[in-house]
Each structure stands twice: as structure tokens, then as C-alpha cells.
Image (cartoon, rainbow, N blue to C red; front, side, top):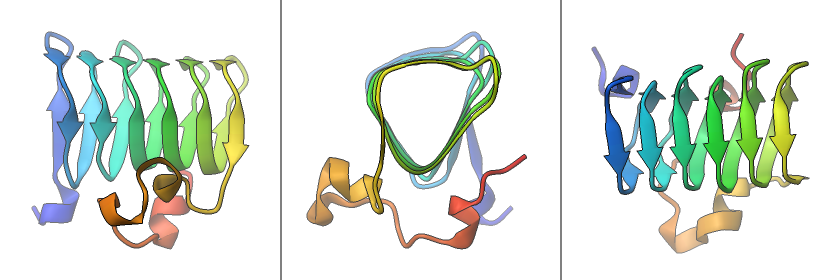
Length: 132
């Protein structure tokens, strides 16, 4: 498996207290209390994040309580978000719950961290496309 295809998993029986930083995809079925910064994040139906998320692509089926800065955000019908979302592309399915503000911005990653601290690399059409 190529490095860019690797997916890290926080399974349902795991509780992570602290920041999670990586370069590839992260799938969360458990609970994370801390900030997340990686290329792609998917949060399962039972997944819970308490902290900020910074990613190119974010898909939420579970719960997030915290600030979100992502190029592409998808809230599915089971998503529950408490916090503000800064995004380029935003999709909200009927049934999703959002308590916060949405702000569209051309480069939401730099809005959060600043140019010198930018971890995520160049935007690609793939990272902006909402995945079905």
C-alpha cells in the first residue's frame, strides 16, 4: 500500500487524550479529546471528537465539538457538530445537526494555522471533491 493510501484507525474501544497529527487518512470510531490535524478525517457514527479539526477533507457521521477548518466538509444525516466550520466546500445532508457558524473561505487551512505552520500540502481536485 502506498504511503498516501494508508489509513489510521481509532477503533470503537479506544479513547485518545491528546493531539493527533498525521499526513494521511484517519478514521475514528472511538473518542478523541484533543486537536486533530491530518490530510483526511472520517468520523464514524459512534465516533466522538472533542477538539479542533484541521484537514483537507472531513466527513462526519458521528459527533464533533470544536472548531473545524477544512477544505471540504461533509456532514451526513447522522452528524452532530457543535462549533464553527471554516471551509471551501460544505455539504450538509438532511438530518445533520449543526450548532455553530459556517464561513466559506478560499484557504481555510491557512486561516487557522498561518503560512509558516501549514502542514497540509497543495490542494488537489481530489481533496476538494465530496466523496459519496
